[in-house]
Length: 315
Ligand code: CP
Image (cartoon, rainbow, N blue to C red):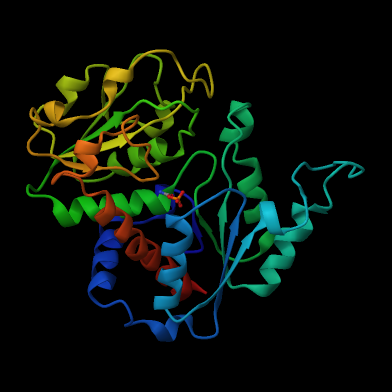
């Protein structure tokens, strides 16, 4: 594997998830692969889980790791082609990415959307410039439209905890005060549409996702109908795709609580984190026996390690 930006870069998602679970049993079995190899992690936006789990995964494989919070620690980056750089930006991404590629063997990049210009965000203009100019394999640490390391960890968690061969998985929209990207729900949807699950997306009217990511999903505006018989509930807020990046008024009653959990099949509750307590997800759910959010975050290590292992094998 030379590129990990979406489910489309993976030949067999079940095999990749199985490899992640094998690595969980035997984390240090492949340290020879990473000897004298360096992973560079480049962040244009904040991160806790992705940063630490991907570093841990690389260390487990015997790699060295360099982290650059380029938004705070690098030169002010110019991202527009053809820019006359007589303003605040100091270095163009063409040089910055190419230079990074001289120092590392694999690069991870995090680049969030601006949520102002849908066409620009969905073209992945910034992320793709790193891919174009760095000259080494690239793993997405979350781009404008997708978060594939999170989605792989989510698939691993479902495979690990499922009690039936084909569980019912529900992606349930939840309230938030800020406009959040569609990257996590887009990505989760496209992975679940390829997984061995019955997949439903529940959201209020107006929060329809881009249909490129939801082909094969059952979509409903009725949360109770979606939750009935659910084995897994993936709780997540996202802003509207149309009007782009907007938070629509109302819908506070979409927050999951124990009453809603009663109509499920004792569902495990997932969330990618960070989560705003008692806005997006209630204390009683997060602190209750059905929450698997910490377990899910732990699986980020094995997901990242499976991807890095396949990249090291291809170098
Ligand atoms: N879920 C996730 O990607 O967390 P961070 O933003 O903290 O990396």
